Image 1 (cartoon, rainbow, N blue to C red):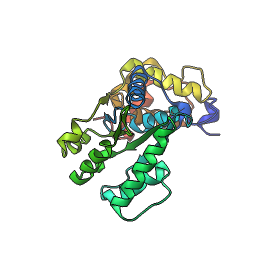
Image 2 (image 1 turned 120 degrees about the horizontal axis):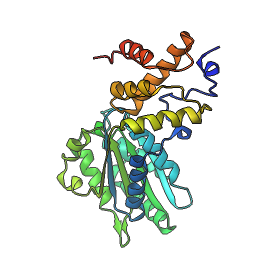
Image 3 (image 1 turned 135 degrees about the vertical axis):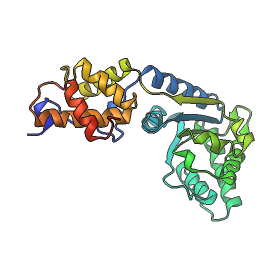
Length: 271
């Protein structure tokens, strides 16, 4: 037996793997999606989502991608995994994601093919959307200038391609590398930490999705989870997962504040 069976859960409710089934549509997330959809539908060109580590940027990016149905949008999600990305690599990734068939190694020719493909997409009535996660890693003036060049591709209705950048607060400094690009940001969203009430709703929501409608965590426990996590979703998940394991090991039917204190010490969060 593990804690799933003990607490009558069908699956782990607090995994930090992004799973849209566990998406918590808080007021903040709902408003962010509405603003991003507006930016895309009105062809604004560039929207930016900024948040601290674990604030839910990647989750929001995946949810946004799901919301863009293939009938009306040609959408792709690109995750930057290292800082040594060249503009050539980036352009090729864009081209592949957008369905460009002739992938030239010559940047000028590749740009021409991207332009043609964007024109094709827009001719069908669709909107081209590229969502990019961890953009703060692209700490390059050259790349920021390249983005500005892509945003110069326009038609009477607006921009031919819409970018949505997701990143840490450092993204502000990266955008500042090219002031004209920074001025092109049409929508700027800042994800903030959850309140204590939202933290409780978030925990309840994830337990419910995992098949449990019982109040597993006491109110005092949730208050401490909020305190130790500062309302950061990723940390909430980590604390709750460890607390359920601890509760199972000590055969506790509910998770109280003493268990949260123990978990906080184990995770180095007590200070």
